[in-house]
Amino acid sequence: MASRPKLSGLQRQVLGLYREFLRAARLKEPEERLRIESIVSAEFRQNAMNVDRKNFLYIEYLLRRGKKQLEQLKSPDTLRLSTMEVGKTPQ
Amino acid sequence: MRQQLSIRVVHLQCMHPRSLLHGALPSSLRFALAAGLSLTLLHLPSTHGFSRWDDDLDLLSPVALAAEFSSLKSISFSSIRKSFPAIQLRPASSRLRICCAAKSETLEKVLKIVKKQLAVPEGTAVTAESKFSELGADSLDTVEIVMGLEEAFGISVEEESAQRIVTVQDAADLIQELVEAKSC
Image 1 (cartoon, each protein chain N blue to C red):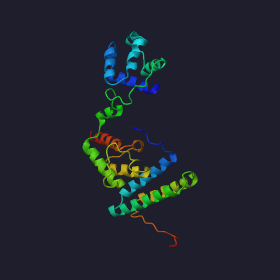
Image 2: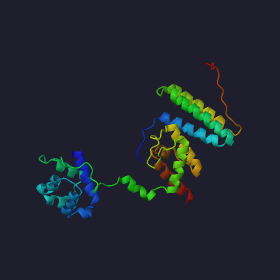
Image 3: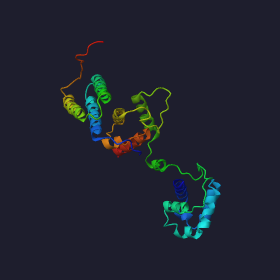
Image 4: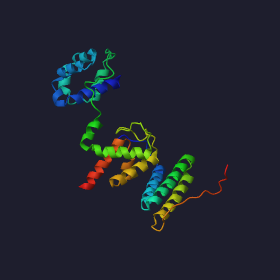
């Protein structure tokens, strides 16, 4: 198989976290699952777009935060995930 | 030019297994002529000593043969054709794949999932040879596709093997492998 560009350790960690999130989402109700998936996907994509790839400290912070959130999501007591936008002034 | 030549020699040797080529070089070269190899190259072995080929063939690697050719400065390769259809082999990978090729139904299923997951616009051809990156997938999309495939086939893909997937065919082969491993 042809190799695709080698991923850095940090990139692999991020992709691994994404996988774990999608796995965790499978355990929830189908309706909630779709919602969780779209929220998680939006979050990852937004950060992929906006965070400078050399900003390792911030990426590591996001990873740690993501892992914590993943732990919470994995718990069977967690039923759904929701987001709210704070402090965004309408333009 | 030297590289081009070495490729030709490799082809020649691949086309004719050692047993066939050994002691039977003239006929294989006649074949080469028929295939469009230049006359200059055909004459080369006789000027260079045919017997050496017969005797030392086992010892000569394709690269060494190419080096021998290119050491003769008087030879012109200008008429070597760019394509060499009669002798050209298929890429080795596609021949190797035969033994572990994914069944067409698996491939179909994979293609369907990929199309759905990436929301490929109608009319865009997605084939087994399509690369995910060409279809506009980033690494996050690839993760999503692999997860989708895992669920559809009821398997679990290791992270390392998931990262080696480049084309749709790669994905289908991997899944075939895992499905078979699961069933036995």
